[in-house]
Image (tube, rainbow, N blue to C red):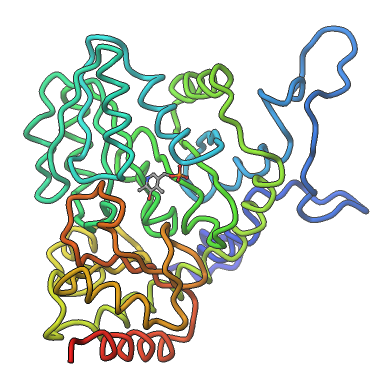
Amino acid sequence: MSSDPSISPVPGDGTRAVRAGLPEPVKYEPTLPGPVFAAHYHLPGEPTGPYTYGRDTNPTWTHLEAAISELESPLESAETITFASGMAAISAVLLSQTRAGDAVVLPADGYQALPLVREQLEAYGIEVRTAPTAGDAQLGVLEGARLLWIETPSNPGLDVCDVRRLAAAAHAGGALVAVDNTLATPLGQRPLELGADFAVASGTKALTGHGDILLGYVTCRDTQLAARVRKWRKVVGAIPGPMEAWLAHRSLATIQLRADRQSVNALALAEALNGRAEITGLRHPGLPGDPSHRVAAGQMRRFGCVVSFVLPDRGYAERFLDALRIVDDATSFGGVRSTAERRRRWGGDDVPEGFIRFSVGCEDPDDLVHDVLRALHEAAPR
Ligand SMILES: *Cc1c(COP(=O)(O)O)cnc(C)c1O
């Protein structure tokens, strides 16, 4: 490390997060300009310039998109396109980059709405192949594919695949690579640096962290790929509202604080659950004995806020959730308040009846662990 004060070091995550995407200071203007509510902008004469119509561009998105680009790709310039939800961002990549006759590789164990996307792709004449995330099994079905979709860590199973290895193999065969970065957030891993063409995520979860908005984004470095995604947004119109975009940007200032606290808490919870008799299938990529840990440690900088485990049966799991006091029974994850749910209640994921997806929040770790251990004690059959 150089101690020469004239050489600026690369700023840390917290320093970048609190300033990400802020415009140059303007006297008497706020640091983060408020949301701009505009369907159209004053536009005399030739319709040129950055702001013309509200489905195409909005200054509040511009700031947020710059911020996300700085977090996903701090060392190289990148473009971010924000969407109304994570699913809007996911479908924008899959549907804008593929044509009838192409083959797409999806994870077999990805987000529960991916099977719906699969149906839609197949209806458009696109071949869809799937393989599990664990063991880099998607490598086995890449032959001739146009696009590889990776979700690591996978939701809710928390398997991890080697992004560098999969991206290299996909590129060697001419396929594009997209990584769903929802669970990790850009502070947990940076898919573009690991070789992906697209970092895609739901901003609804840990990115914004307060459980009060839906948002999605796509970040990529290639301007032509970005242009296709941007055009898709214009065609479909799945745009974020200015209020959501502004709230998201405001939330990003605390992402390093939240991500650090949540990953410390998640590890504390996983360690407290490790080895307990009523628990099987405990998973958290940060746990040294976890099957995902080795690969995760090679590509993740924080291991995320989700811990999953299996209780003996449905009744046990329901009694546990009911007995929790500082943890809400709710879906989604990544919020400052811990939540947990019995994932099987949705029917979609291929998990046991007693499977719990636990999203660890920003509570004091001792309080959280105490609440969970007490709830487990109360849930035990007597
Ligand atoms: C929630 C989620 C999505 C979908 O995001 P929405 O904002 O709900 O549309 C996509 N991928 C993963 C991994 C998710 O957890």
